[in-house]
Length: 256
Image 1 (cartoon, rainbow, N blue to C red):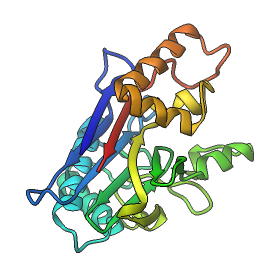
Image 2 (image 1 turned 120 degrees about the vertical axis):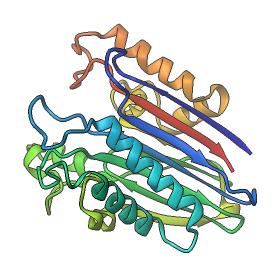
Image 3 (image 1 turned 30 degrees about the vertical axis):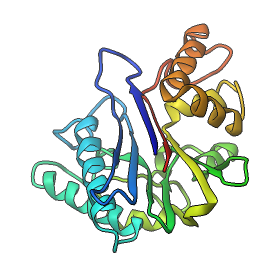
């Protein structure tokens, strides 16, 4: 088994709001990964006394524990329970109904000797390398479709006809992209936040297959380093417009 993980803040002066971790059971016959991208709110009140990094650590830790220990629960149920637990931990001090309450994108995957399950919510990405070759990206493309239509995203967050993130509503797990493969049909997995997928989606340095080949050969830190190099080469976003010059980035690569 090969597991590699890397994460880096977009700005060293601020906490990294991404979360990435892997759990391996004592039995040694499976595992689980979780990658979250915390959504940075605009300046101003978000109704919460906690930081986004606090939220992603709580939600990510709970989801990882449930995914690894509760094999009887589908990943959607694990996410629902993790959201409920996190909401309960600060519902008495914070306004969880606020539309900017801390929230995150989610990628989760779980493998056993028999199968590999996955869940993707919002614009982080899961890459799957089938045993027969090639790379299959698992995408929740709601945001891309809304942008292509010229829609304003802010009013469409966690709204029907819009896009969804993990915030305080446990039922949002029903909106996730989910599926599974027989274990023998998958060689490797990679989970990436959008700070890392910039290499493909923003800078066009390669396609998903080339991104996966880079991860396999050089590892997650090499991908993040290449994203940073591309960002530094265009600091004002002139050639490649983007909301942030640098973004938090997280990558997990697993050969189960």
